[in-house]
Image 1 (tube, helix red, strand yellow):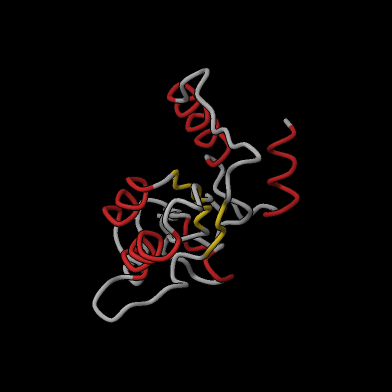
Image 2 (cartoon, rainbow, N blue to C red; image 1 turned 120 degrees about the vertical axis):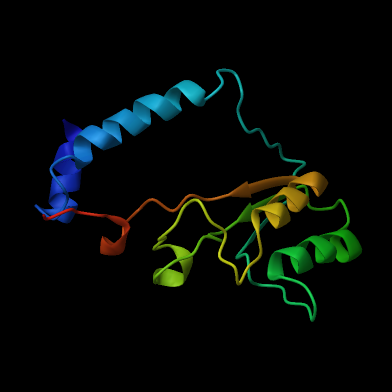
Length: 142
């Protein structure tokens, strides 16, 4: 399989033996959750802001809360889409070496802050899956 060959080229024999099987299970499971016909669409009328989650700071709010307030107070509806670069906890690479895809880095805010951004525009975020730090895998050697 092409995926196994590519993973082997990248990681060699450092991945657990069960990794490919589990990855296939996850792909099959989440593929069923994608609703057919639903897709993101943007047009030439849309303006997209591409930004890191922690780029705007305020005194008594998280960066994500401050970003929302900045959008409301300064930008208004001139920007309709935010491509929010990694906001997950990470170990290196400016957020692209994610250690927990289920969490928002506490320094940036919370999932409620992400939901609040979605209330005012189409909020997008990237799932940086180009590499996995060794700490993301648990291998039981007993």
